[in-house]
Amino acid sequence: MDTDLFDRAAKFAIDAHRGGERKGKGFPYILHPMEAAIIVSSLTTDPEMLAAAMLHDTIEDTDVTIEQIRREFGARVAKLVHHETSPLPHDAPWRDRKQAQAEQLAAAPRDSKIVAIGDKLSNLRAIVADYRQIGDALWKRFKAPGGKEDILWYYTILADALNSLAGTPPYEEYLNLLKEIKNTN
Image (tube, rainbow, N blue to C red):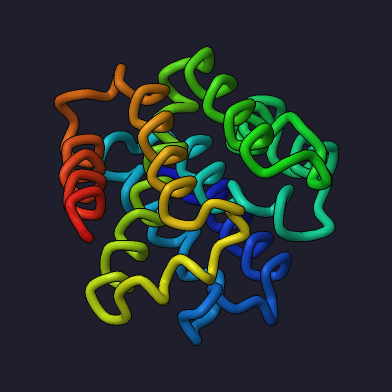
């Protein structure tokens, strides 16, 4: 397998996220895209999908533009990254942005959903692990105005948007973690 595209994407993502820290975690942000890529690799060896998993947060969380992604990595990688990015501006209300993102993913092709499950499962793993450690204090980390209620709403509508992946190990793990966090008091 030629890993050139993935290697370039990994370096690009590392550079783009340099100095960033995972919220409330105390470790480099880049570990999240790496985990997302590992999850995606459990479903495909497609180099463009693996590259997109590494790059999925560069548009929302750095100064990188979709045009830069397209120039550096091609139209398909840019499309996959675009599907991971809310179509509404950052200053739109939180719920509106999340609803639009879920609707975009629901209409997206399967390859985009595979990239998305890498991201969303990585996030949900972190949420559950942190909840196990710090309990309800976790919900204060999020920009969601309704705290736990909004976070659970978002991950539930994402489960619906990604339900064409039902039966795959990452999707089933996602559902199990979502159920676990819903059952907390």
